[in-house]
Length: 411
Image 1 (cartoon, rainbow, N blue to C red):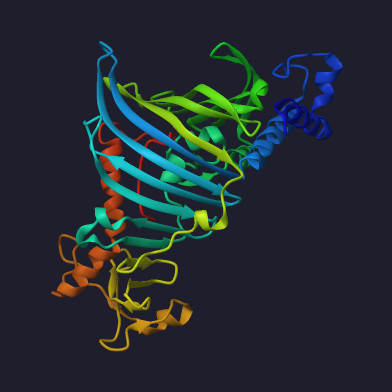
Image 2 (tube, rainbow, N blue to C red):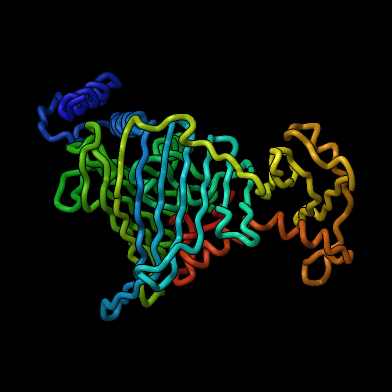
């Protein structure tokens, strides 16, 4: 669809939901001029625009490089920290991401960690690739918790695919859903005209308690999000991201370069993150492109079925004991007949449970080296997450609701 036609169709959609009436009445040729609209019409306008962009991005694939540099507030000196690469695919409600982290402090450093994750809205699958794990065995996880990287890579917010919300920054959802929920929950909302990098845009601000977040939408570029601001506790923590370059892909405007700033007033420096898009396509993703298949030799912790197993050469699964320190429970399996063809609800019945006795340090204190080993296996993906957290945020304090903390790479 030609760009002009797509833009007209979006404005037609807006008129159909009743929000173009005010604009037509005042005869404005500036689609960013919304002064004559009622608050309800403004909300309908923004939601219609965000929903339209979400439909445009139901089948997308892109590659983004991110580089982090700490910048002194005193003299502007710059220190390179690290870089990452994100390959992302979306097909309807399923997100898929390959995360690659490189050596810290070395602009041309090699790869130190790599993982693949996905999320279909109900179940997440993740795998740290074998070459970056002890014993060269893929460390895998199945859970009901979405992997943090899908939302904490802030370029996702510009596309509207993900936003981090909630009092503890513990909810992830599309930007359109976040705004719709804010309206339904009665959060303070402001929608107004604004200037952003010399362009007329629409500003959408949401206030909740000590937190606020605002988006800048550019009607001239298909209501693309061109800027995001988030702050906590009277601007003590900041997180901003602005689109520097953009282009049309299949008649849809997308950001191709963006710069993010994060930090707090107490820091002597703040972090600059540059996102550079290397590839972007629309309509090329197939179902198989968002799947994750665990290879032979993988160690898999399935928290949905509550089983732990390794994948054998013949494709069968060898059940293993494990411990859950949070529940203080040990899950034992028989010494024989631990091999199964697949995982279903009946597999869980093969496990027997007993209390886990923790020592003073929090480690299993029952003297069982096997339980210690499988407890470590249960926490493997969390350890990888801590590595990611150390690599990406060790120089920057975590600020609530600003998307500046990291967790499990493999869940």
